[in-house]
Image (cartoon, rainbow, N blue to C red; front, side, top):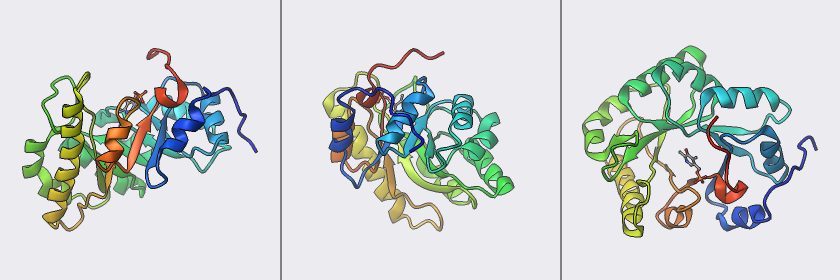
Amino acid sequence: MTAASGPLPETFESIRRAIPPSVTLIAVTKFLPVDTIRAAYGRGVRHFGESRVQEAIAKQADLTDLPDITWHLIGHLQTNKARKAVEHFDWIHSVDSLKLAQRLDQAAQDLSKAPRCCLQVKLVPDPPKSGIDAAALEPLLPQFDQLAYLKLCGLMTIPPQGASDSTIREVFGGAKTLAETINRANFSRLHIDQLSMGMSGDYREAIACGATLVRLGTALFGPRPPAP
Ligand SMILES: *Cc1c(COP(=O)(O)O)cnc(C)c1O
């Protein structure tokens, strides 16, 4: 037992148990110390989500004694960090442009390491957020399909800040429908079998709409410190 069991909120275990076993729980630990990761690991969590490449690299260097962690990059990724992201993450949820996908694909080839990737999509207009508009995605799909090294297997989506319940359902339901539409086109590589959707405020709705990966921070750990 290498993980120290640091303090976690009392609600940690009940939230964790509320996630069906068929759904992968990603514990989002951005801005939180490695002790928190160790504590969650001690309770059996193996999937961790970080929003920044450099922050994650620093934490990974502290956690080399926990080799069976699956690392998920969930935050916006600049193309110039594509290579580092491929090196340090098992999953990249935030593929929000064809150009980024092409850089990641090149890095995957160079490093002989292919992370699983999600296309970040927007099902309703949301100007401040990154992501590809569903309508803009369709004509690009054949080009995404050509990427030979990346494992493009999912869609990731986030409802707009403050969205109503009906908009949240429209977003999550829309992601599910978009995945089905993509799969019906029978591309040679591109096949979507993962839906990364649901955060602390809306994971129940996301699971009801077919989420396979939920990304929970505050629900598990309480309020997090501001971005450094
Ligand atoms: C921070 C973050 C989360 C977790 O948010 P909570 O509301 O704390 O659960 C999930 N997904 C992404 C993309 C994030 O940036």
